[in-house]
Image 1: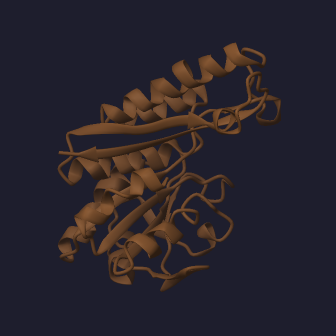
Image 2: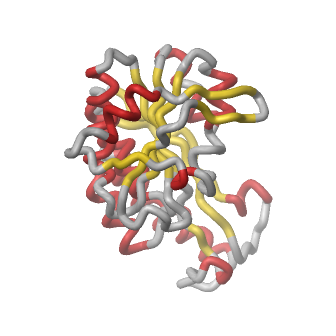
Length: 233
């Protein structure tokens, strides 16, 4: 996470648009922006750009409504905010929950355009884990061990990372639906579309690993994939 966020400091944005997964299914196919004033973290508060939030929710083409309750139990954006408070203390945030199949690409474009209309220097961040592998996740098509881990990392994760690197929002959602290789494909689709709207035309994969690799497990039975990618012109 820190690897992906570090390049943002050089951009000097005054707004960070944050697209996150919907792990709890509360939105029933709707994207949702938090209309509140701030998020509190152990290292300080992060102010929400209420003006941009209202503009985004008020745009009928965005597919985004306004709901504080949608963000209450969700951690996908929450884990990023302390890094932003420390690294970009002057920037406001715009938290947007994006369920799969909820028009993530449209939400990504609309969020950037709302920020632009209001004169914000914006960047976008998307939050999603990759393959959740193992019996505890109900997904273990190759059993367990090193060969299953290699397939999960080098084939299953790699397909959706390739779609992201190609800035292919539709391909991201299709890959996740078919291969279960991301928990937040809507958020990934949204950030790719936002990046394109901001002028990005390529991507750099900074790091790709799994929880099993981090723990040094040689014959794992359960793991989650993680990656950091930056989109740029």
